Image (cartoon, rainbow, N blue to C red; front, side, top):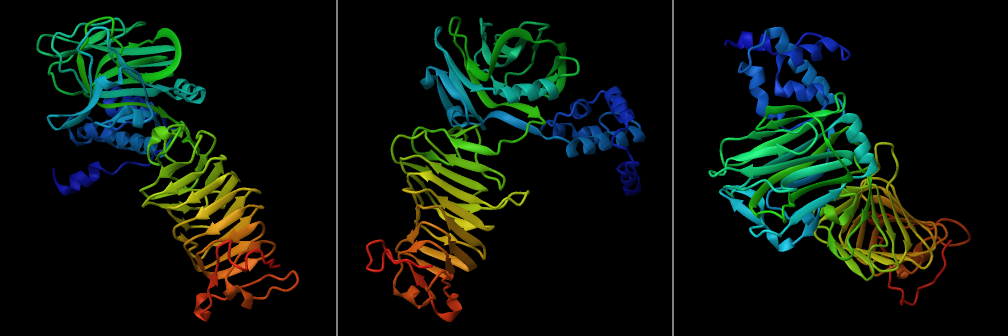
Length: 489
């Protein structure tokens, strides 16, 4: 094909978003990619069907234009949210799943170059399931907008029989119950079975890894099953078994045990809004980036998100942060200390609605030992009898840090304002660190070194310290220094 023809083929005509003719033509074309797109389900399978655009599926040029248009419209619409996911040889309990059964039956495996999580229940009576509860909001969105259950797996066991619950993956969304079970023949070729309702089964040739997708369409209240991107079962209806959970593993303990390798398992819901408030859910120390340590499962790392370090710990604990993360707000609310420490940088940034970032300390004595960067003006509010220590470098980057509340803010290292401003509106600011920049003290108690005595401090005026260009630094002495407790207004 010449370049001119190729360019002509890839030039779509003008198209209105409400043009239903597009969907009708694309559905008639019978492409898997188009079916997924027309239903509004964003799926990673689409790249696997790129040949749709390059001639593997015979279509007229107008249909190609329409296909590209609908996929463009679909991409600009609601994005799918992955609510539960396992991948590779990651431990599912560190991905937001709870183990139910004999945990020693699961282990990571490099299966001929494919990283997976291996379940080996080789003895009858042994079970291991990984479960993730579904919230009422998630179920409501799933039933309204549709959902996809997806897995990439291999069953090495030949002659594996079909058990009562079975080895596979399933979901319960109120009364709707989907259960995909697997058996194998003597050559380990798998057969997938859809349990209950309008179920069916389909045998796959090849004992290697296969992709399985159950795509639910709320318009028809039915689902289609795709194996390796090819539709193999249509118009399936769910069985009835009330519940609210997504799980995978081996619940076949009453039957013959077997082995299964999960390279990928996930549930996806289009249109589901992303969580914006994450609460520390671990009972002790843990990694900031481990999604199972937060509720809902995820990691606070966006400028519209809040991280709450609340009442789930019963002794001093450390939250390790070794990667960069950005949040809009951090809340400390526990009488036991939280220490946020590591080689990562924690950035506080305003969200898209221009809500300034903040740190709130309701109770307890807490520490930020990781480096902290301000990308926007920030308020630190510390309640009476509470405290927050900045142990490592705090960079204002030209922004204003305002201290409010009757509690104590401690700077025990270098605060580099970068032409920023520290405003003290209440409580105390103490420490053994240095502040380079300007300090305005309205009604707080400072425990400084002698340097600050050169600033104006009479009556109710604001005390200001010149920038480092004037060769003046405010030295914040420890609480025990002789200047501690001096009142500045």
